[in-house]
Length: 291
Image (cartoon, rainbow, N blue to C red):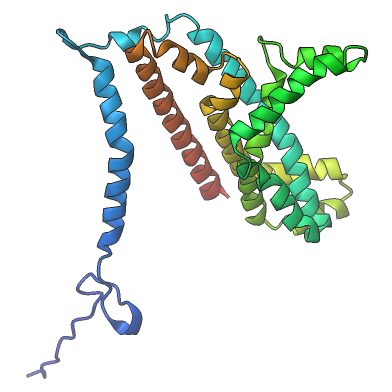
């Protein structure tokens, strides 16, 4: 008769992983509580806005507000203007920030704190103060530059069809977000080894930047682009005080006469932004799994 061997019940057999000191790790309920509170914080206003757009007095449920979005006067023009401003802002921000971040990381690491302070400085300046300075310069320019070649320039940057002054303002506002995204992406790769290997093979610095570093930072550049586009599509203060009809200003303008349509547009734009964020996250996850 074989001797009986005692069975030892381990934490793994019970389905619990050992924590510190070999004790079973308790489920962290606070994570679920935080997620629940975050869901309530974000979803309750969205649901309330949606209910407001589909509930018509004396008629009940109706989706007429969403059907009127695309036919509303000024919708297409303001949306295309904001998208154009966003595209121009993204291009300028990447052209300014990416070479600066790479150059400081490779050639002058001691200047990295200075670059970080400069790029994050717009977070300290309130938008109302920023736009007050811009409007002062725009009012001062035509009076004092009338006899100089810069007169036509300061008039051209205020063209309502495509206000370049808004692009310049949005570039400043987007610098902190673009810098953080690009700096984090650059820190995730061994940029010094990659650049030195490419240089030893005879590649020039522009070739190293465009063919070696940029392909390894597509996820970070996509993140910086998305944050910049979200900022442009949601910025209201500067465009409103400078009297330009961007998409957020258009939503505010029609809110008095068509309240349900304006809220429907806000819900629609928010859902589009979430879809873009999910697509960006999925693309980043596929890139990390592929690499």
